[in-house]
Length: 87
Image (cartoon, rainbow, N blue to C red; front, side, top):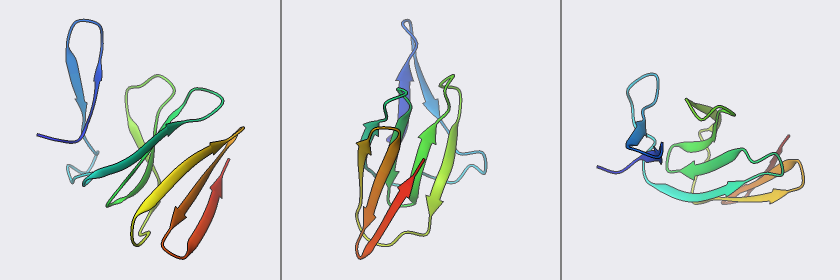
């Protein structure tokens, strides 16, 4: 178990990385002003596509606990001593 899933109204669908690896443990999740879903895990930061059919990596290789915060049209990520903004 574990990972990221969505409810379609009739059943649950699990998102799987394209390379069949793992997202790791999901540690944070937020939505931006456009309603896009972002999540952080032990493997990096990811964004769910607008049509909710796939997950795109945004930033991998970040060390430590990753925190996400929406700020208008931007997402602010902090990871240990690193500060990153994504449009």
